[in-house]
Amino acid sequence: MSEFELQYKPFGQRSILIEWPQIISENILKSVLSHKQNIEKYDFKQKVYIISAYNSILITYDSTINNFYNEILTLKSLFVGYKSEKVLPFKLWKIPVCYDLEFGIDLEEISKKNNVSIPDIIRCHTSTNYRVYFLGFLPGFLYLGGLDNQLHFPRKSNPRLKVKKGSVAIGGSQTGIYPNESPGGWNIIGNTPLHLFDVNNENPCFAKAGDKIQFVSVSKNGYENIIRNIQTNNYIVESEVIND
Amino acid sequence: MIKVLHPGFFSSIQDLGRKHYQHLGVPFSGAMDAYASKIANVILGNDENCAVMEITMLGPKLAFDCDTVISVTGANLSPSINGVIVGSYSAINVNKGDILSFGKPIKGFRSYLAVSGGFETQIKMGSRSMYKDITLTLSIKKGDELEICSKNHTSKKYSSIKFNIDYLSSEVISTYKGPEFESLNVKQIDILFNKEFTISKENNRMAYQLEEILKNDLDEMITSLVLPGTIQLTPFGKLIILMRDCQTTGGYPRILQLSESSINVLAQKKVGDKIVFKIKDYN
Image (cartoon, rainbow over all chains, first blue to last red; front, side, top):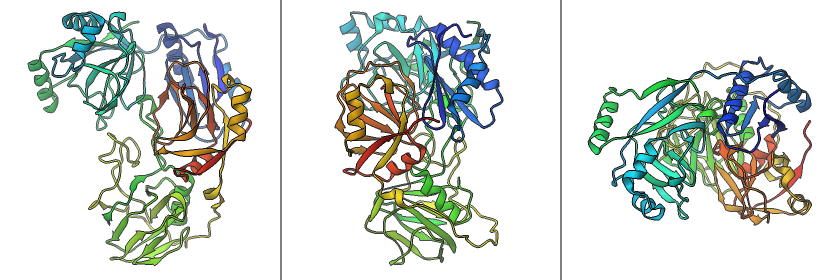
């Protein structure tokens, strides 16, 4: 049995949703990813697509499910006597961010309202390793956990129509990176020169669910150097293998 | 090649979408009315996943640079060749130099133009479906020159195809219980299945919002997974029906899920149209 109580629900004619307790935690994430890996190993009679979020897995079948009861029994049987295994090693990705006021257009407001100096905001934002829970919202958008309470800041009541590609931002208790230009209501504190979603790359996003992200502060000069190196294909995102 | 003289209100190239990249936050995309898109292809003997042109309300003006065969399905937007009205749901021979244009919308909202062999726009992540930041553009533009896939023509004549067009005027949207359905109270369920709902002006390839408000105090939920056809209920009481270009995740309670065929029915609705919901049981 799984260490958490799971619920299995039909979701439309072609999908089954598996749900964990409604809590955001790394233990639940690890259980979700471990179960996902186990389901991926199973030889389904038809093609399935499996995705996950904070506390759910969605299994979408290529055609309609004829008997949900049986299909759910099959899925449950995959976890009889099951103990979560460690999923493939995760990686820690180091993401350069320029926190210059030119990019960090909401830094001053956060500093004033949260009563934290801008250097302290940057120190705090770069001193955590953020866990990637899943990708969603926009292609290449990472849902990250672990933002320090000091930096929590409400979303804008009037979202901006255009947020620059690569903007690093804070929305409520979350932090994230806009992979492409889009409308957005989060507060922008910096910008990364990296492409978080590169459609021309065989693997369009370097990070995956379970990995960790560390933001590294770079100067305006450093930022521009990285842009040049990316353009000439001389840049590799720094990463290391982590074991938890 | 087909040259775009005028793109119309909103026309894009779509096939049946991207199925393998939702874990990266990539939407499914694909023809809003997948049924009409498949029929358009089948009429020409194409594979049903061939790329077609999805035409919204006011159609484009297109010039053909080659002889070919086309079909038009879905909404009746008064298609004509060189000014002469042509029939929908049949194979139409087109000659080099012909101009295809559209007129008054008569029934439905989205029409599908298939061409023998299919449109040959760029394939990105396994699909030609146009979507922002994945394909170069999200719709066709004036002056675009759209290539056609060369096709090894089977000599098989365009066989008679059975198809259904009643759904174009149907108001019934069939649904199944969504993951948060059980959070609704009896009164809310009664309203959902006994009142008429109206398509608001907020309707596009991502989602259809409805005019009516369904008062609720459902708990907020942790962001979870959604699908095309998911009906979300916001704290303000707005009903949002997600469509083919929807995000892969969302944080509003998912009260209902449209049947596969009802997504096609809804894709033919425009602002002001009425719909009613019916509930079906899971197998």
